[in-house]
View (tube, helix red, strand yellow):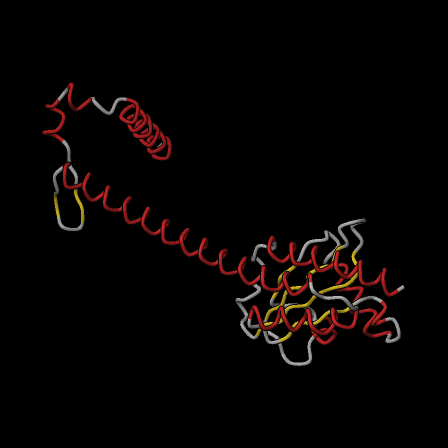
Length: 224
């Protein structure tokens, strides 16, 4: 019985709240209602105006926080774009496959201040059964052809790409723009566990993987 009464009271309160939202001028039409209002906070009873001002201040603080967050994101994106441009400029100047395999990872490592950057292809691990299995596991995680960030990669995958302990890393498929084939994997390793957290967006990394993959496809064709 009490539950039914409580449910009815809650329903009535919701209806009243909805009515007030639809008729914000009700207190102008019936000012006598203001005499019966009770607005209490931790300091005791406050006026309607004080409560409205407090609400507005809360909203403004929330808006300011959102603005700062968006500004930080925009600044970070601008910084990443600038670093990507420098890497891609270097990528365009590469003329030989050996140069790509050595100089490109170095330019990425230096531009983004990473501990390790490594490129692996299926052919580079074909002679080592354990590495071949690890490469297949990494490729399976990249089946959607998008970069994947994680701080809990299997140890076998970490061992395949990195020589030192890495706390988080991103695996980026090197994709040929011409036919969409995955030609290899670019691994970015950091000692910061938050650097490549699983929820990190992959748009910039995917762009890097596509352009690097297209460059690799050209170099492989020229070397054939």
